[in-house]
Length: 95
Image (cartoon, rainbow, N blue to C red; front, side, top):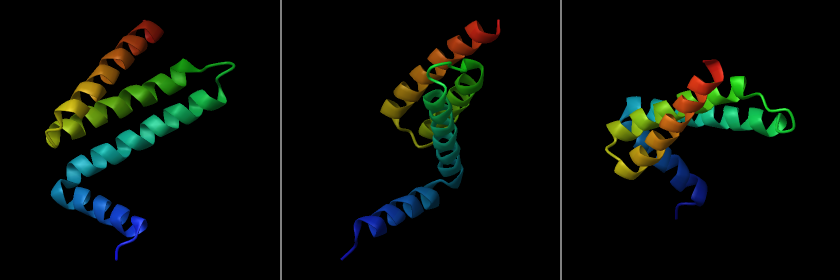
C-alpha cells in the first residue's frame, strides 16, 4: 500500500517523465513565486516591490509557459492573469 509520501514522489516522477522541460519551468516558477512571497512577508511593514515583483513576474511567466506546454487551459488563464498584472506592476514600478 502506497503512503502519501510515495504517492507524492510518484506524482513528481510522472510529471518529470511526461515533460522534463515543463517540469523545470514549473519548478522554477514555484521557487520564484515562493521567494517573492517570502520577501513580501518579511518586508510587509516596509514593502520592497522592486525586489518581490520581479520574482512574481518571472514566476508567473514560467508558470504560464509550463501550463501552455502541458495544455492546461485553467492554469494558463490564472498564470496569464498573474503575468499581465505583474507586467503592469513592473511597468508602473520602473517607468
